Image 1 (spheres, rainbow, N blue to C red):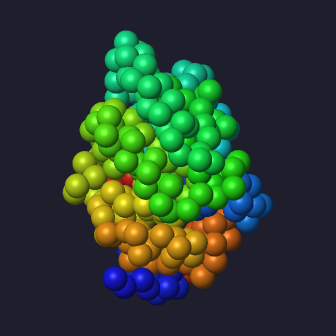
Image 2 (image 1 turned 135 degrees about the vertical axis):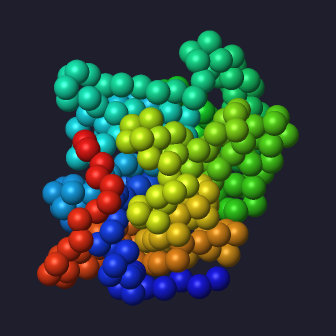
Length: 281
């Protein structure tokens, strides 16, 4: 398991990038806040012509805001249940769910049963504060608004989800569970195909992914160029796949360092080659 400093990122790869996919919690944020340097990094990346798409476990309600107000091309939310994007030409938000509304309602009833079992059997676990804004999944808080639970209790939460046939992923703050075979990567590929006409299987080396925790593993495994913020190291011994590059700092400061490194490498080319593929916003 080798992690190279983000400062060793290949210059030619940086210059050829078309976009950046990134997690939000503890990747863009620091202890729940978006630091000025992290938010500025988004605007700087966008100004440099790079496409930006958050890939998050956060809920539909938050993603509505993100798609409308952040300098992003869209957002994949609830660990791949949907993508949202704001269309300035139509002046409205466009939503693309994996499941129909009817299917989502049926799955919600099954998740409610799991919720009651977890809360009754795992001391200290709580329903995530953002659960009322979720459309598809169940988020159990183990480290955001509750005292952090030990890993044995996190695994117990996962065991309940799995017993009921649900998928689950552990983020830096929540355990998210849902019914369905989607994940962050699958919906990211759908977004790229439907929004940009790009087959990521052919162009995945033209994108960078940034993340911090086990629920980012499908993205780390898929993208040849992926970077973690330093706090990823607390999960690394529980992960089968880690990114090739690591920042020197945690959270938003680490994200800002990753972005700054990419931008500096791109600016260092006095004769930049025109990209063979252009993403229009």
